[in-house]
Length: 220
Image 1 (spheres, helix red, strand yellow):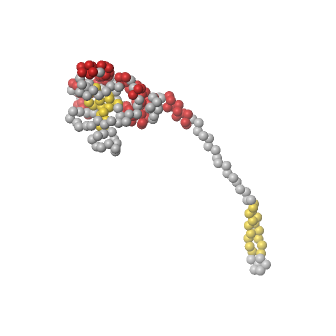
Image 2 (cartoon, one colour):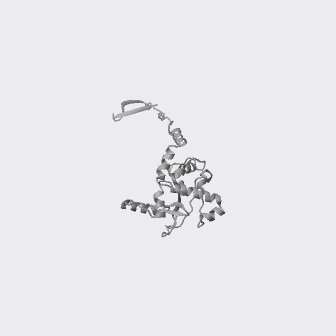
Image 3 (tube, rainbow, N blue to C red):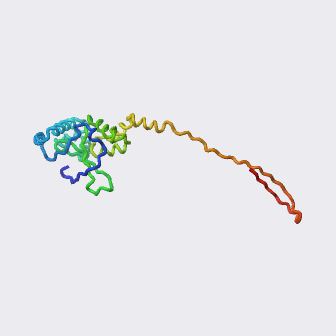
C-alpha cells in the first residue's frame, strides 16, 4: 500500500479493552524495529512476536503473507488476479498484517474515511466476539451494532457471518427473545354496550284536512 494515499482516522470504540485477550492490546510501534522495541518495551515486543506467529500460520492469511513478502502467486491466472485484488486491501506494518476498508459516512470528508483494521487469526476470534458482545459494555447488542463495533478495529474474512452465528448461539440473547415473545398478551374483545329501543308506529288523521300523519315513538 506504499503507492496509495490514505489517512487513518480514529473511530469510537464500543468494546471493552479489559475484556480483550492480552495479546490483542498491541500498539502501533511506528518505525521501531524488533531490537529497539525489545529494549524499550519487552512486554509489547513479546505480544507482537506471538501475534505475528499466529497471523502467519492462520489459513486465512497464509496466501496474503506469501504474496506480500515473497511475491508468490498461484499458477492459475484467474486465481492470481483474485489474490492480487484481495491483497490490495492488506498491508504489513512491522510484521503485523492489517486490513483497510472505506467507511461510508456522510460526516467524513472524502479521503479521510479509510479505517485500519488489525487482521485477527482464527485462534483469537472467539475472544474478540466475547469481548465485544458478552461484556457489560457490549451488553449483548444485536448483529448490526456488534459488527459495526468490531470492524472499527478488527477484521477477518466472513466476519459478519461469524458474528451473526455467534449471536444466534448466545443463550442469553435467545432466552431474552423467548421471554419477550413466548407469552403474548391475550387479545380480548372490547365490551360493546348494546342499546335496545322500543319503537311504536301509528297513524292518525288531523280533524281539519283529514291528512294521515305517521308518528314514531322511541323509548330506551
